[in-house]
Amino acid sequence: MINVGVLGATGAVGQRFVQLLAEHPWFNLETLTASERSAGKTYRDAVNWRLDKPFPESTGDITVSHTDVASLKGLDLVFSALPANLATKLESDIADAGIAVCSNASSHRMDKNVPLVIPEVNQEHLGLIDVQRDSGRDGFIVTNPNCSTIVMAMALNPIRSRGLSDIRVATMQAMSGAGFDGVAAMAIYDNVIPYIGSEEEKMENETLKIMGQFDGAEILPAEFSVSASCHRVPVIDGHTMAIWASVNASPEELKADYRNYSAPFSGLPTQPEKSVQLLEESDRPQPRLDRNRGDGMTVSVGRIREGIRFIAMGHNTIRGAAGASILNAELIVSKKYI
Ligand SMILES: NC(=O)C1=CN([C@@H]2O[C@H](COP(=O)(O)OP(=O)(O)OC[C@H]3O[C@@H](n4cnc5c(N)ncnc54)[C@H](OP(=O)(O)O)[C@@H]3O)[C@@H](O)[C@H]2O)C=CC1
Ligand SMILES: N[C@@H](CC(=O)OP(=O)(O)O)C(=O)O
Image: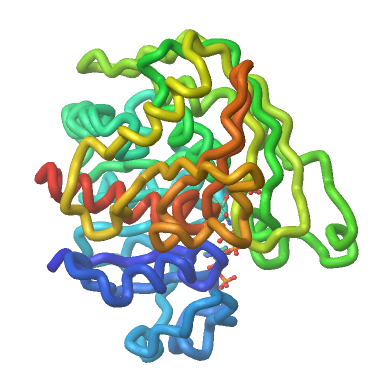
């Protein structure tokens, strides 16, 4: 078993990490950290459990630690669900101290020597771990993309070999993406908010890194363009998006690509049976009906039309956040980086 911790374990994403790691077959959940408000309390007392899954009782007696390097002694790997402003320095310090960091925060995603990974899409980018180690770092940082970016990149991946260009996307993003206290009920109920800070830039920039080529030293970004418009809607979990792309193939050919697609690896505990599921019904995917496919790890696509135009949807705090980081960690272990 690999000893792991969760940084920011009481937050929206942190709770998902704890839920998914409590009974993990490879990872032994030893340490949970949060702010000074929570440190010193048992996890049961510190956390305001708000997930749609029962509180994992096996974690209840863990004493919440301070979020600093000293609290992580003896761990092989930490999962970070910290606010980005805290993650910037702390994640670097932890990696320098010899611990592997799988981060969900945006701070290091675009760093030159940090892999921004979706296992199904660009597992070869993990070669940047060697680049970090060659620069003298004992541990390393691996990041997963922004939640909307993950859903879009996974949805495009099965048709990528057709040649993609001129991608446009309009998102309809769930409230949980803003964290528990991120959007007031009075602001979102009966409403749509057509702005999510920095989200459009993240979708436009991160996608080019993820779909770029690793040349053994650095990532050469993909050359197509992405134009995004991001919107918050009154849905609890599940980011839905309408995607337009120039692709040299008919809708029927693309549907066949989705039906024939399978992940380029197997045997990882968090891996769903189907990473991308094509739904043939004319009114799917829908967040309430489809977000829990593959225990929240499957991205659903549908309504593929000439243009090319289609809809994609995925669970933002599982496939778009905690589950993404855990799948990255499993891939890292399977490739013997830990
Ligand atoms: N929500 C989502 O869908 C996604 C979120 N992310 C990213 O994940 C990260 C966490 O987001 P989210 O879970 O929504 O955030 P929350 O606000 O829900 O949780 C923040 C966590 O960080 C802890 N924390 C806050 N301040 C400090 C501090 N000064 N020192 C130590 N710990 C602190 C909190 O502890 P305490 O309870 O003690 O205050 C809590 O555990 C962010 O970087 C976010 O951008 C990424 C993808 C998707
Ligand atoms: N901005 C996303 C969630 C998020 O925190 O993204 P990031 O990890 O890129 O900061 C949303 O609101 O749905």
